[in-house]
Image (cartoon, rainbow, N blue to C red; front, top):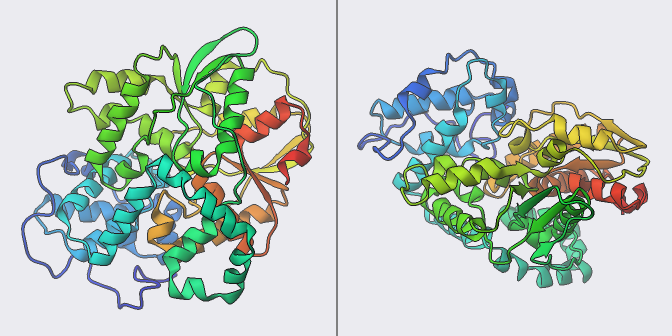
Length: 452
């Protein structure tokens, strides 16, 4: 256990200050007193909170942060140390699952972060890093421009040379984190605008192609389309769609998230879809809250509510519809990792396990301490590379201990984070999205197709 300044070289700071100034929060959607009052400080959240597990600091636990929120709504200023503890939260929502009182910590931290983003002056370095992240990550076309240089870097041998030198983590830890997370790129064709169902049509679904997913995991999108078509779905994939706003809303950039949400709703509003399918857990949790995000917008509140009602995670929809495509054997041992925003934020755990267990020959292994986040958490691992690496190493050790030959999960960030951690530890395990496993079974590709 280490304190909340672990890795910074600084002495622990007082939780609240000293500071001066006005109250921490303004009247624009502050964390509300009634939600704060739901927390009885029982401590059930503590062993499930990744930052508390790392540091053992009360202020870096969910109940500690709620205490700070309460100080803020009662007039305390927004101190640097208060903001630090809010920033330290991964937003994994493991505490929401663990809480016996039903505390809506997800709503509290989201409202708090929006206040911080508007009202707290960040250092020039923090501003520059966050500006760079949000000028790149929510824009699929900009991300795709990186594919060429990244493939050249990976294939030229330069990546191995940089790794052997060991200089990058010491000189530029943020850049080192980004470099280690970059997956091995593979080519995949752009999806067509519409793919017809195979056999009898059971549903018309719109599909989110995503930002990181479309740029770095296009094969996951291709597999998703094939599985949906095989299960009797017409799939609509407008090329004009953009970011869903998940990264923005999870980091307090509410107005930016609202702009992305309105554009996505407009893109699919007249499509005639029955469902809107998402294959990235972080995106799915935000899409299911569009009704709350746009509740104060008279032009979009009703549209957002109608859109939200149609959102389904891929595993959720396939489980709802029930399988019609034949499953062929995959002789594999699989460890399934619950992406936080699928398991905790959306409560989807049994559906993907059921889909995987129905594949002949596939053996499913559970991972120890499944409630602890892998450390990816959107952009948290980029902003906090050292503690994120510690969490990734913990997760990778538990994954490798299962003895499985394949790790399966439903979020691109988790795939990149655990792959990097496993490589650091010298472990070998193949990785795949749930859609890729189902696709391999339906197309009778055999288990070896997923191990290379």
